[in-house]
Amino acid sequence: MRVIIYLMKRLVYLIPVIFLLTIFVFAMVHLLPGNPADIILGGEGGAEDPVVRATLMKEFGLDKPLPVQYGIWLWRALHGHFGKSVYSQEEVFTLILNRFPATLMLAFAAMIVSILVALPAGIISAVKRQKPADYAAMTFALLGISLPEFWFGIMLILAFSLWLRWLPSMGYLSPLENFFGSLKFLILPSIALGLRMAGVVTRMTRSSMLDELGQDYVRTARAKGLPERTVIILHTLKNALIPTVTIVGLQFGTILGGTVVIEMVFSWPGVGQLLVEGILTRDYLVVQAAVLFISCSFVIVNYLVDFIYTILNPRVGLE
Image (cartoon, rainbow, N blue to C red; front, side, top):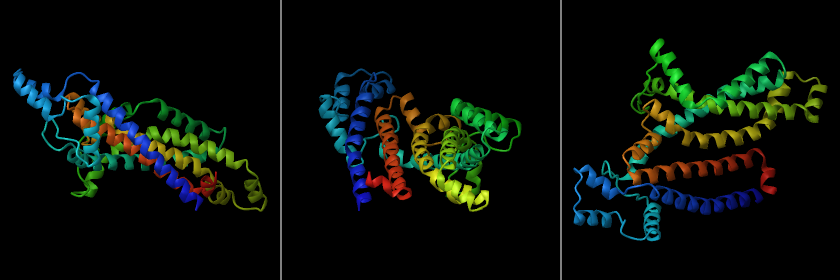
């Protein structure tokens, strides 16, 4: 019961956080120079008809004070209406919903890559402490944390697309059309995005494993004569994964925002690419909605991490 109360409290805390996010996103975009009316007029040959401009300002609600504009925008956003794109004249919410599956697909693939690489590396590094395997894993983790995703992406394109010609350098294919064909386009961007996360998870897994290996229950299990593999996998790893799950969840939220650069490098049609296109075309309604969508996704992922954490460690809800 206390765990449920804890989760409900965390859910209530999301409301002021998301509210502050809406204020920040709205203010950030409105601090940028220009407005949609000027962009439309400029796109039509630079017309400067004051009547037309006033009509457009009224249509976008730009003739009202900022607090009123924010209230109208927030009310419409709560109902899923973010306005129409100045550039394409499509509903912004529809644009984001069409792009979000590609971003989510890339983020999940990157997370799977990072887990498959980081967990074995972290475990081996802890078990083989201060041995060549440990130094190799820590060097990999340091490189993963230090080097940016776009550099990994460019190197992967050079190696596997230009030199070996094994995989396409860019593009996207929906898994609903051709599942196995879509994997060819997914491999390189997911590796480029996942390696950075793998560096962080490797270090956390190693640290957690080292803490658990020094506990009394591990010494007791070894004293009973249990095989070392059983001690590591069935006893130590279960407890060591609790902080690792937290880091994986937080990094997944970071990945959702970090797809912006990778999507541009690999021409991946996700929300990140839509955000960059909106910035380049000064399509402020698209920028507002995309930033808010990514930010809210990060907040929701953090809540889900808390939920999973209470399942792995129910004592959290009692504190």
